[in-house]
Length: 260
Image 1 (cartoon, rainbow, N blue to C red):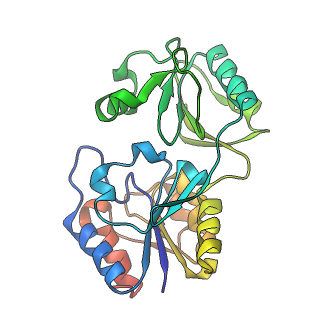
Image 2 (spheres, rainbow, N blue to C red):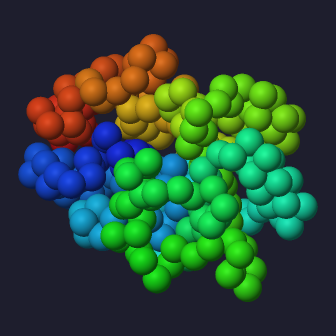
């Protein structure tokens, strides 16, 4: 039996496009064969699309390893402390970086920095998807967030990164678009905690992803699979590179491993 962990964006799902029928078939076959299947995403729980959860999973690692669940039970969840939130918000405002704070139940934005939705597709996506769960830090009674993401506009963000690297993991996807995780948390760490709960070893884990925030889990898992549409850092650390998502990459990878 294997525990197979799937990233969402660029792996299981592409926003605005239907999920590949071969992907749904592969997941159903995995469970039929007795394997466990998990979501392992940078998205917080509230941002996992229903069309993804409807595929059927045994659990999830969300918000880049700060949240984990198994068969409806929350196993772990980390929330940024008030001191951490104040530090982040102060620096993001100082550098005029558009940012969001991502929690399991709410996504928080800053009225001073968020700008227009067309400046960042994900801002519009959040507004369209969970409008009543997208609240400003100015109006929130309290902020319960697990990580932060930024879109730094019209600036070199490296100075901002340097000020946060001592306390946070900085994952830059493309220039100026990055995630900030509390030290000690990652998708790999989340997978490790799930495996400990299940009494399984890392050799029992298969990780499938495509981007910079998947690198650690691809390295950690017994087998790391990168999508054919993946980034170069993800491809460089994978044990196997499958076909792109739109060419049935998930089904192809699971068949290649002999899991289905």
